[in-house]
Image (cartoon, rainbow, N blue to C red; front, side, top):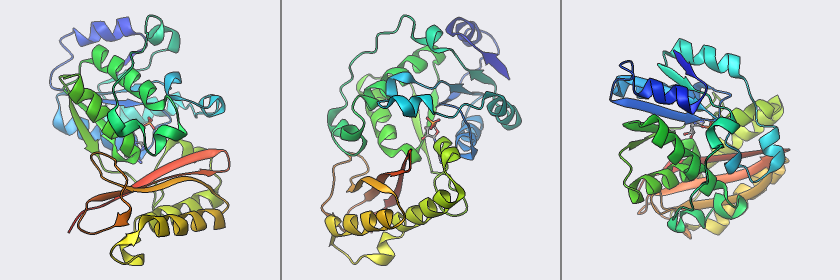
Length: 281
Ligand code: AMP
């Protein structure tokens, strides 16, 4: 595995004969887990060259302590990537990557007005900026993103489409712990008890069909989800049922509509998000 620590080293690699197209690329913030490795494996299956970036993007943190406390585990990340057969790892320092970078302002349409948008001002502009920058350096043919970050995936698809970027965006299913909890680098900061309780929340938002009758108002479901969160000592940010493409919220849980159940909440100092698909029947 080539480890590239600067944009200049990456540029030389991208021009080399080792960089065979099609190229699959997985942008990450490190502290890797099975979710990230699944994305890499898909990139390996579908491309001749497959690699990962690790960059804790300061532009996408709207909360200073979340940024400072973001887990870093580079030696273990390198080991996992080598075991999984990555061809390259791009792991730049902030000064190197962002030295000459003035992030543009992106048209995110209404995708930024819902769910994470109001709770994390500037977050998706920061995500779009860094992903766009990474695309321009790596020049991948395909880029792999997890459905775990459902709204992020919608934002990246939108940016790629509106800017006509020559990259195919591949969405990959959420990888979960045995108890249902979506894998996340932030889970490292949870206690065993919090992990168990958060697993129950994930299982609940993935079993709404079994619990709520057809056409239940979203507000009723939200109240129950919030009650379950509070019962476990968690603090809700939002629960929404939204259109999976436009992210427009639905006021009814109707089986005639494809809907994504999306949630964000705080477990102590750790903010967790998750989502689950309900396809129309
Ligand atoms: P992050 O390092 O958290 O920025 O995530 C990097 C990529 O991995 C993003 O596209 C995430 O959506 C994806 N990802 C994170 N956790 C999971 C998971 N549990 N299952 C699938 N993809 C994931």
